[in-house]
Image (cartoon, rainbow, N blue to C red; front, top):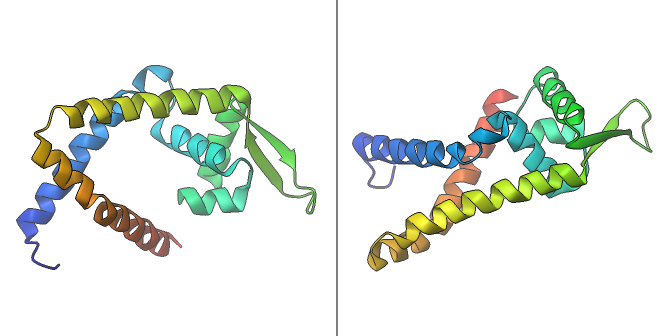
Amino acid sequence: MAGFTEDDAARLRIAFARISRSIERTSADVGYTRSQLSVLGTIVRLKSAGMGELAEQESLNPTMLSRVVGKLEAAGLIVRTPDVDDRRAVQVAPTPAGRSLHLKLRKRRSDLISAQLAGLSPGRSEQLLQALPALEELAEHMLVSTRKVLS
């Protein structure tokens, strides 16, 4: 663990958890779960996706994904259409309302982070900026590791 102690790892985990909870509070008023908003975000990012690809991207089992997609579709945030190559499969795509909600929440979350970063000392802000590639690599590594465990 390259110089990190167990206490360091615990501190990092606690910091991530606190940051995550603060960010999640910015979308608490919209009435959707974290999973629903995550799936919506992935659909908006991909523009259109099959259920298999979406399940893999979100690390959700097909039953849970089907429920989430059903709720998003019922809310008018996404649409399901038959796959042109395989009529048994479906594609999901965001509606304008779904894209709008996702962009609104993304801006809200980014504004929160920007405001909090502005409150840090310039040295700490610079340290976080320099650590960003390592944090992105850690996030990707954890995502890949989690997918392997779940499959």
